[in-house]
Length: 328
Image (tube, rainbow, N blue to C red):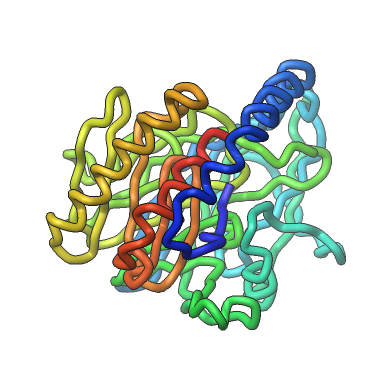
């Protein structure tokens, strides 16, 4: 899930105070999950981004939970994405007032997404079937804007953008079909393959690579997530091994000295939290520099704005806070 950087404080002591109740919360959460194991939907996504044109093309196969097999499935997709192919007959449905379109902390960006437009569809799965596939394309170009609640912190929000400066796709983008009735779980697993333009790195939650030798970024989630995000752009990558985890830093400008500070901080905090809490749940933790001011935390990476990432006190305050989020 996504989290705002709640506080820009020079003191790290504040982040150590919650550890006592964190152990109790984690123990309770683990027990609850063991008792109420929920099967999630699964997404297999192959995508193509065209930054100069702000374009997105995608092919998606959705596998619904066993309980929804053979039933009518309703989902929403951004209205600017036109479906050209469906594996099952597709029926367009009217939007229903009060529909919550995505889960995530960026609630104000849902209002922006609704201004852009949302389409609701229904497919009916054959008896016993759990999969349907779609092909669609369109433009994703909503420039970041500052909402009233973010004005004081100079943060801006967008439900999604593909631009020569970078890409940001999230639950609010509605760039993949988000299930409504009868699927009640908000969590999902996924695998994603997307072209990485020359000189680009694309980062998503979980494990994978930001730019493979074949020009593809590939990511998959080892555990369920509440939205599928994709961030990145023309970035320089720096890496270092932190035990079994790879520390990663992605910057818009070549800055080995700053990258080294973040790589060192990542290694130190991962080691400390591993000893206090338990094994880190992913193969990487990445600091990704955004092309506008943000303070987001996603599973296995954080997306920070160009000014925020250069505040010296971030390294001992908000940055370890974002790493700590990955345990719960």
